[in-house]
Image (cartoon, rainbow, N blue to C red; front, side, top):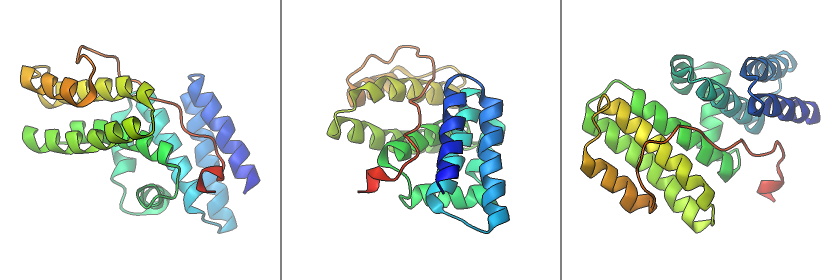
Length: 192
C-alpha cells in the first residue's frame, strides 16, 4: 500500500504543478496495479478517483469528469462509493463536493432542480468551513457557485441568486475564476 501512497502523492504534486495528463496517467497506473494484484482498498480507490476528477476539473474537461462521476460499475464507481461512504478524509470529501457541485450545475435538468442540487451541495461545504475554521475555502465556494449558476442560467444569473450566495457565505458574489484547494495528503492519519 505504501507504494500506492507514494505514487498518489507524486500524481497530486504533478497535478498541482499543472501536469494533469501525467497525474491522470499515474492515478490510472495505481488502479491497474490494484486490479492486477486483486487488492482493492476503498481509501486508495477513492483517492485515485478524486485525483482524476480534480485533474479533469483543473483542465475543465467536464465531459470525462461527468462520466466518472456517474459511473455505474468499475473502479471509478467503486471510488465514488468509497468517497460517499466516508473512506477519505473530510477535507477530501469537501473537495469532492466542490467538484460535484460543478457537475450538478452542468447536468441537463430544469434550472430550479439544478440550482437546488448545487445549493445543497455547496451549503454543506460552507457549514463545514465555518465549523472547522476553514474560511479560506469560502472563495472557492463562491467561485464554484457563480460558475454553476452561470451555466444553469446561460450567463444570466438572477440578482436574487447572487444575494443568496452572499447571504450564505458572507462574501461578495462577483465573477470569480473557478479553482479549488489541493487534495489532502495520502495517509490515514486523519482517521486516528
